[in-house]
Amino acid sequence: MKAVIVTGGKQYYVEEGSEIYVEKLDAEAGSKVKFDEVLMVNDTVGTPTVKGAVVEAEVVKHGKEKKIIVYKYRAKKKYRRKQGHRQPYTKLVIKKITVK
Image (cartoon, rainbow, N blue to C red; front, side, top):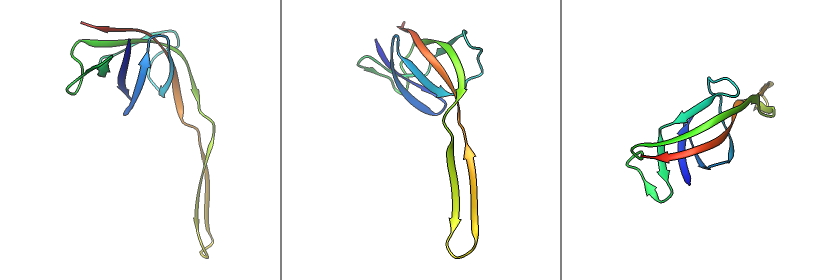
């Protein structure tokens, strides 16, 4: 089965056994997470969500992405600001997609 879920303000196209990286969740590594905000399952599109659809996932690990550099600059004004940022993430493995 395939589904589209919403978490962290983003939509993810998932299927059973797939690994995805999402915005950081408050869950321990090894614990189970359920997503009930499912927008689509196979060819069934919800309005706005599919009733009774649940996607179960397991938290594999937490981490931070590669550093990106944020550089602000104004020409001829001697204004320069350099800042780094590493976005935290949670790695999930999709275990089961069910529709009641």
